[in-house]
Image (cartoon, rainbow, N blue to C red; front, side, top):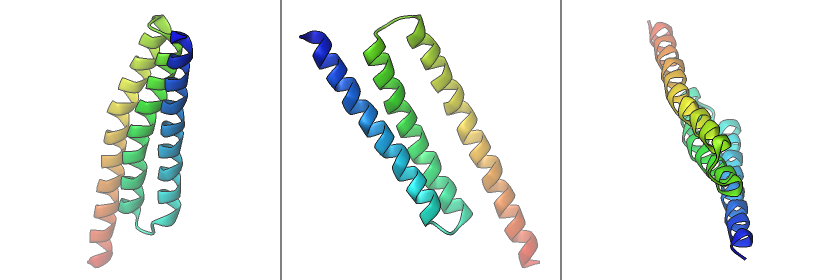
Amino acid sequence: MLSEIRYGLAAVLLAAGVLSLVTGVVGVYRFRDTLQRMHAAAVNDTLGLFLCAASVILAEGISFTSVKILLVVVFLWIASPMSSHLIAQMEVNRRKKEEE
């Protein structure tokens, strides 16, 4: 009984994570400006990643695999904002050069 509830909750979390990621993809294709596209991708990427990882950890249970999943999530949470910041900074510099 408890395992069915756990797997049901994991399925709900996974569906919410996939929905968040799909929303981010739609936002990337819908917006025209680079900075708006990056914002849509970054916000939904973070939420979708968290929900999908939480789903897998819940379905798998606390184990060494859960620790590895958490390490991957932490790495992506560190790398994604830094890369987004660099891309945004390049875009702002490019716009400044075009205005001159």
